[in-house]
Length: 262
Image (cartoon, rainbow, N blue to C red):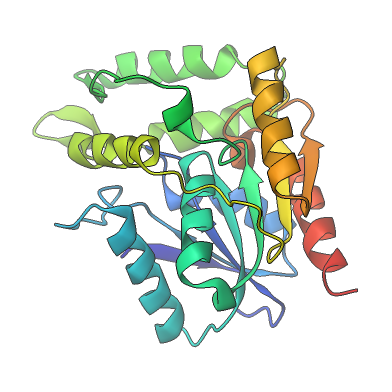
């Protein structure tokens, strides 16, 4: 298991953070800088980065997270997840409820994909031969996020660039297609969302994108089912909330977690 600790000397509460599918644990770096009152442990998904595993199941991943926390002598923590990470931290709360202080869902985890998605095509990860082409593709992707500031765009470009590794003369994505497709299918086949849970306080952060009626229905269904949910929309942001607006995201997360101690 591959993880990174931010603010390791902080004696405050611990946050465990799980990234979106295809992303790396370093996506939480900017968020952690703004959450300096917390010790933040970001963990790679299986088959991502340098974390290779023969067992790519979410069940095995949850067990490995619990083992890691035991090794680090962490008995309780707040859990944060972006996209697929939001479903995974809810799954963790089902298995290890006594370890969970709260759940923060970052633009994901508030509906069961299996209710809305039919069979999907296999995800194919990009392979790029020329570094110039890689730079151009990333720049085009980031420039399409027109709500972002120039400095924020440059930081995101650098992060996306590091998602690719030079191997055998070509630039390949850090995650394996087998892992990405396995994890993607898992959340469609199994409903990991909380069901009428009053045990956990939940913060749902939504990206600043116009939601269709179906999306609004999903949010309403989740909040009606889980009454302890606080919903906040993050301005000038996109699906990858930890890097597209870490300042506003961290402010809501900090206020939410601090309020639980009052």
